[in-house]
Image 1 (tube, rainbow, N blue to C red):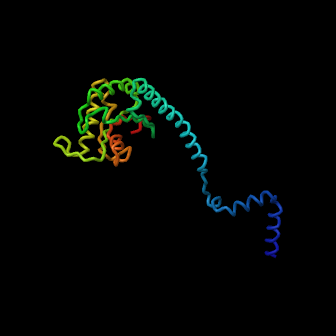
Image 2: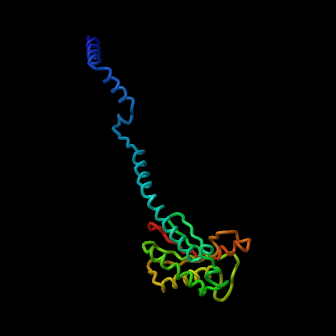
Length: 214
């Protein structure tokens, strides 16, 4: 009797469910996440939103880099310096590479008159970019130096960078914008096995950091 009653109740309960209700119940029971009451967070839309925000900022940064690059290239060309100063843009930086032969005598750290004249021509451009920090970086080739004043290329590159910084400071560039650092021969632009390569590596770089990068 009890068995028949239970069967009747089960059949009655089943008859009150629609096909849609049954399918919903089946999906629920087969989904362990739903049974445990956990919530699945859609990660992809969040990642897409961050990518879209980054894409919005990137064109503005690229435009600022390109504008500064064009300004420097145009000014250098008008002053006849385009062949002796190289301007490159990368990773939120505008890099102005000045060869040693323009600024210093070989193995020395005192600015030449020609070097001072070149820096004077760059001052207005650097001043107009006052919202950007400026790194003055000294670089040498791999040829060793060992003098009482410069025991190694580290001292030579650092003193050259500091000398350029002090000159720019005397021309009105704010001290809080600038820093000087010597890299010796650790960041070559060219192969040190040739005279031309070594000459290109002996340089001072004026690096404008955009968007607060450094």
